[in-house]
Picture 1 (cartoon, rainbow, N blue to C red):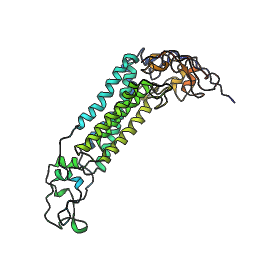
Picture 2: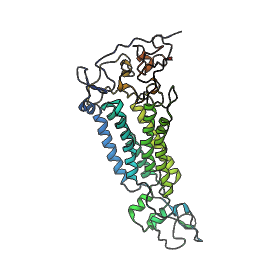
Picture 3: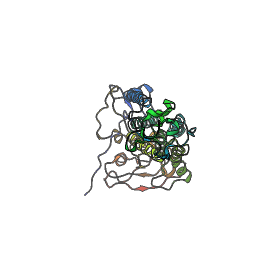
Picture 4: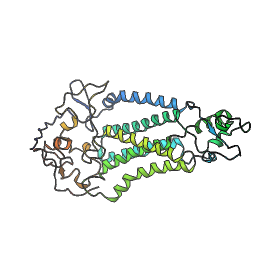
Length: 382
């Protein structure tokens, strides 16, 4: 039994992710006819929500820790109960502002650098918007956990500087537990030392650098149908090294426990993957994980004309051969003569049914629903 993919009729007025006027004409696209006004109207409501989320995050960040925590200091014989909270206060190796700045600046630099070949303002703006959403979502997520759950930093006792009135003056069994009321240190430092879990540095680093890792993987096609150049592999995994170094530094200067940084890494990674998939057509499928998903409407932009394939307008566009729909790399035939398609009726098969493979060459198999083959590898390039 075989399926037959329906032919796709190219629509010259439709470009993936474009903004449209009331006649359905393109007002903003990947390269040609792009206008910042069209892009802004399409994403204005998202930007307002992001501003609102940022204000909430800042408010929670500067708020006093919500829970009242009890903690022991010493046993009746004078032995410290939890030595892991008695480290000295040191200077941070990587301040939080630097971790956040690096998590944005480094990916943004490469987004701009890759425009040498991609040459698309829409691509640059939308990819950067995804990065900011990843960072902000992760940041708001972690500050709420810090505020409502938190935990003692390794240098808590050094910051608290407790003044105990003698054995048996606390609460709990044998009266060895106390609250922050016995602390005599700086109130701002005490508040900060009560919000160890999860790590904000680690969250920001992984939210930004995992997003960059996924971007490199898509643009350089490291995990695809051909063996890539080794330098591409190194460049792709380098962001993971950067994020790990930032997170690991926190366990050296004793601003965090290992589980604080691990939790931050999980939060940042989940947000990066989620936002990347919300921005691009796939996370790992090399055939179209470099293609930005279309945005066909918003509260401040008119709806697009109905599409034949309602689940995604970009499959109705036979534009896989243009630079905007190709990744940065040209290795493995991308943009030359190689063509292939995927399973019947997926994005690559529908594109190929109009005679165009996902790499810019003619596709195979989509017209008869047999899935994809690959043929005639083009000359290798970077």
